[in-house]
Image (cartoon, rainbow, N blue to C red; front, side, top):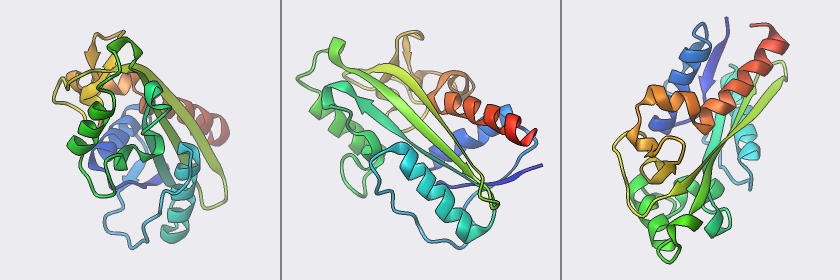
Length: 200
């Protein structure tokens, strides 16, 4: 049995993380950051992995429980990889999902649909008090539409079209998203490593 603290205050991300863990490793006991005293971690690195590692190891030291951190975002080829690690803050430091989507659409206005290739990338880091760290990454390729479609999900999901589905991530149920998303792929790799190393 493992107890984990999920190092995120993003409710959409927290919902996905908990559902993915319940699906792949139902015996794990999960804790949110609510109820713990901790100092926020500034995500000031240039890669998803570095930010996830910083969050996991820093919060572990404060809370003293194994900590799972996720850093993920959208990379758009026509924008040279932006918004990238700034995905949650693309339109500014204190903005909502709609403002971020609006900025993305504005920047892509002159770009034709066939050149709006993009990917969601997720980096996971799980840190234990004994110093062991496990990391994994998942990627989902897609395309940015010219207007939102669907009402599920969060963030940029309503703009992210997956050609193999013929739908955006906001047009599918959470259960289906859990089978194919960048976060789901990262979890599959992470739990494979955990099974090999910890025999859970």
